[in-house]
Length: 409
Image 1 (tube, one colour):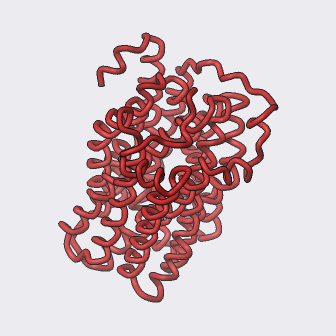
Image 2 (cartoon, rainbow, N blue to C red):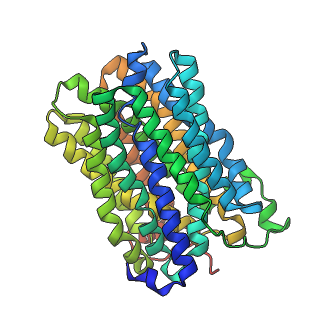
């Protein structure tokens, strides 16, 4: 991580505070990951209703992300960051008093605003700071907040829920985000790139989304979002149904450990050989993980599937962010990130109700098999459609060619 010593002291300070903010934010979010499905079941939800409740999270993302991306470009990355962490601090307090499914759905939709704001502003701010020739490496290191938070949060959340109940769990989640909010206030946000109302800055949502540089990554994120939404919603219930002696929080912790470890390598190497190979590897790991869950019958099998899923997420998601940074001008970066990740949001949104209905009819195992097929389809799409023609796409996706849509600035 010697790259940080080449930056001036003010940038290093901003990155350190930003890292602490991200760590606290993701710890807050992840502490609810293995416990909210159980809480929904506790207040009387069926499998499909649990999927609807958890999937409601994406409603806030889908509605607000385009506006928050535009706000990040036109107003302030820091302001959007504050909005995200403030919502993350407030929503768990609502869960503490929620006793009905409609109220839980409304709170989950509200909570989704936090992810829409935080991930958009965090990625844009890190990319603004990073030197272009070291962009992948710094994005990779700064994205470590997610797996570290995902390692700490589920373990603490599962422990608090088991030992003290749901109220202390919700208070812990709120407190973590509140501390993150205090950190944000210490960040000195760099000036935004000049924003004009000409050219690409006037492009509307669907114009940007349907452009070739954005469309294929968004479809890939949609299909992977379906797998991720399935994992985040149904793994605790699947483990419980198999009667395997495994704390669901440990599944997410195992994924976080491998996601953390892989990021030290991929970002730095991708600055030399390109992003495509690592995106392909990441999607493929998601498919392998889903098919392993399809056959899982022991704690070891669940943990191996979790470890491979962690490699997939730790490889693919930072590389998608770096790839979209390569493909976007600074003055449109917030919107490009927001629109690309909208695919992930949609996947999460429909994973719960759609794949939850599959689980109702065929069981959890076949549901994970279907998720594996969808991520396999994402691999094929990226291999054949990621650049300007089939040959260039295959070369880019296998690390043998340049990104045809990368910009020079």
